[in-house]
Image 1 (tube, rainbow, N blue to C red):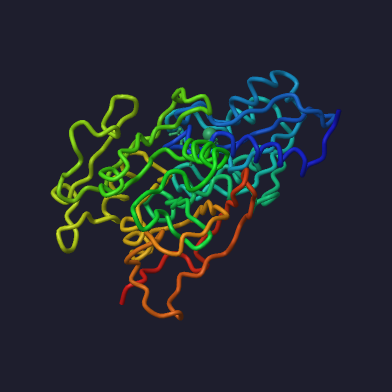
Image 2: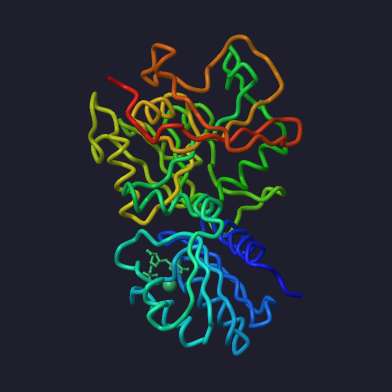
Length: 354
Ligand code: AOF
Ligand code: ZN
């Protein structure tokens, strides 16, 4: 069966998305190789841990059949020797005639692959399904631009935006399908962030678990924002089932004795972290919003009303409607009995205060 260019690239984008959370500090790149007749002969994504790169995985699967064929890649093939030899060389050696690229590589040391391929007589097309590929690789691309991980703030609330009732009870606002969906999303990030208030109130594990309760093989780093070091020694978040970092104001000094969140994110980026999944609570989320550090919001809304109780967001530094943080809705999905809304700030991160 032969497939057309958009179909091949759509497959490459799906492969890229499937590796989210597994390839840091590298991007999760997808690659599909067609033979000269247009049939799929190899495909793959950046391996867990970031190497080998996608092209090498897909070309290895294709073998000789790549000769005279086309490679579809979600990111411009690298043109440098980093942890591995250049993918440009691998594509030349495989004898492909054409390379179709969705997104240019903005990472200067690795960039220039398109020109290098053209210099070798290979036809290169740029920009096919660029928006879709950029979305699948958004965390890594954001990191190259900002030097910080991409921040997704997730919360579960009633339709009137409450995350706990007036008496403090909060189990369970959303249903089992939404809770399973959170584990799936959590696994697409490499880091989970929570405030010490949430740790003290709920004693969450913040690990990735399968629907049957067993832990996933790969666990994100758990980070507790804990200015004064109040995380109990026996908190579940400190248990040995996943790595944990307790970020204190002593290590990340900010204003008012609080943790400098931008500084913490920069530190995590330097440690190779590319996507932070914020799990609460309202105070931490508010501080991140106030600092312009939230890149994406995932809201699970249960069709229930409370009318009183904790709000999902607190202290975001917004006092008047004109300064509301307006979001662009990317997706609305029903998850079991609940609704999931995924949205991003309309205007790229700007501090909300002042
Ligand atoms: C590709 N295909 O699958 C990926 C690429 O240190 P290295 O050698 O692993 O190179 C990492 C850089 O290569 C990374 O920062 C990005 O620019 C590019 N990633 N390139 O051709 C891939 N993951
Ligand atoms: Zn490469």
